[in-house]
Amino acid sequence: QGPLGSRLSFVRAAPITFLETSTETYDAIVLVLCLWYFPSLQNIRRTLAAAAKRAPVVFVSEWALQGPHGQETHVLAALTQAALEAYNPTPMSNIRVIVSPRQIDQVAQEVGLKITKEVTMESGTDVLDGRWETAEVMGEAFEDRIRELVKGESERAVLVALRDATIASVERSGGRKNIRAMDVWCAVFTRDE
Image 1 (tube, rainbow, N blue to C red):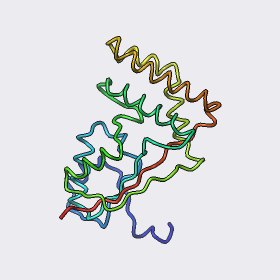
Image 2 (cartoon, one colour):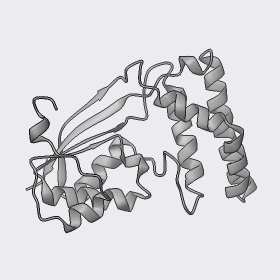
Image 3 (cartoon, one colour):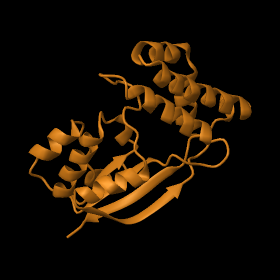
């Protein structure tokens, strides 16, 4: 309980259901590094549309899909996971749908939100997501999932190449201990009224 504790509330619920059925309004809604967990772009669109009805400001932060040396491995690993999950009828991975900052902005505009401020920040060295995502792609189980989920030889070749590029990037970086999390994009959206 810090100084802001009494003024903040956290709700653990399915975001679309909660926002579409709630009649409450809020000063702001915050979505932090969570959009890639959503099962589809349509779910992101519905969540932003519902959020726009409940708050005048929506704060969004998501992985930026960019970063300086040492962070490109995290970008490759994330894209590789997302490419595989596109073949999974019941995705449960950390990355189910991958969206770039530009895509988030486009979807937000579609639902009546406009970006009023944005910044891209470098992740701290203590943020380990890059290592975690890379380890997932490098594991033998990931290669097994490629064979299981991707039936076409050409499509499978793309995923194997993405995995190989991730592994090569790890080796070029001097091992997984040197992998850094990619940058984070932060944006403030307001209703376009």
